[in-house]
Length: 127
Ligand SMILES: Cc1cc2nc3c(=O)[nH]c(=O)nc-3n(C[C@H](O)[C@H](O)[C@H](O)COP(=O)(O)O)c2cc1C
Image (cartoon, rainbow, N blue to C red; front, side, top):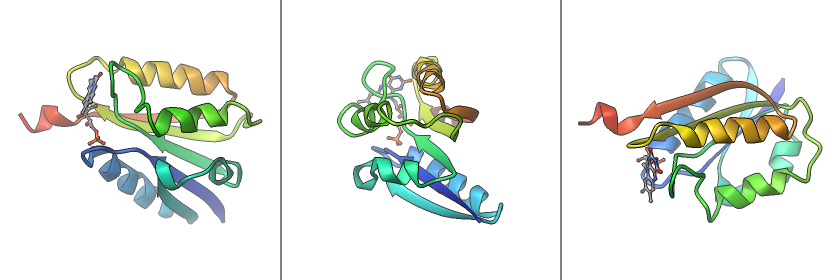
């Protein structure tokens, strides 16, 4: 059985919904799945997992949330995570999704094997 960590930041719940959906899908693959808000996660959760899913919406001005998710992602830069499978997910509203493009490039350059990214424009469905 594979270990999968789903780690996310969410301010108003959209990314949390996505995290729960990603976790549900991963469980269908006979994996042991841990879901954590990034404030409760550590780099050890990433190191100990066979695959990782990280979720964060576009915040600030097309960047990751800066007080919790950005420091967490920075803490991964010191690790040897070559070829670890990674899923990125998140949502945005008024921008063009640039934060996800930047995040994908950044994580790929760290050596992750980025095999999927999921993006929703949540408020598009509300208005
Ligand atoms: C402080 C703040 C900054 C945001 N910055 C952006 C942005 O730069 N670009 C964008 O497209 N959406 C931006 N958004 C919209 C959020 O990305 C969007 O509402 C997202 O679905 C929130 O996810 P959450 O419910 O998981 O917090 C911002 C929202 C907030 C509250």
